Image (cartoon, rainbow, N blue to C red; front, side, top):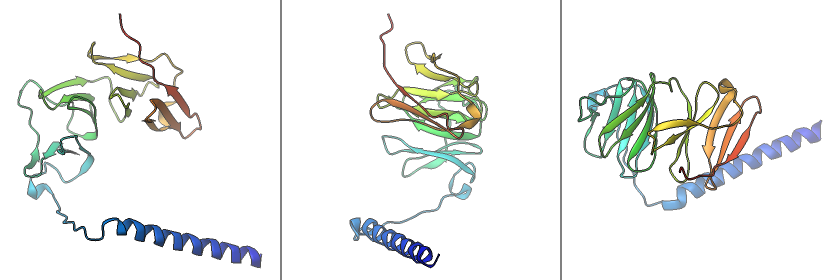
Length: 207
């Protein structure tokens, strides 16, 4: 028991030393760099201080999802995003998740649906069937995949402007913890009930 306690203490000490070394290495990457932090709140233009999601697009613009709409920060302006077309609006006010796809497109999960937001054309396409918090992922080729609460995987077809269900075994949606697509185009699904899966994504031409 004494030897075991000594081994435990040594292991703990080694872990602490390793953690300290890694910290110094990370800090030493650019020791001369200086950073300034600014705190934003509803006083600075945010529609709501309760932030649910955030995404920085390829142009450097930061999109901030709050409990009261989508906010935009371009380095100068900070405030609630308002569509230029009054006929286009988001499906809900709770912006729960934001991920970027190709061609200046953001996929936005709200409390009432899923929105495809084209930031360049300023258009919003809503899919009210995809409510709640769904699992989403983008492939290296910018294809969009989502696990719906019915337990099936869907992918977006740009040509059809709609979703198509994949012919795969149903998943226990409540157990899904994460979905991701690696650089090799393999879709991974990790579940708390150990029903972990992987699928190779292969595109076929639509005739």
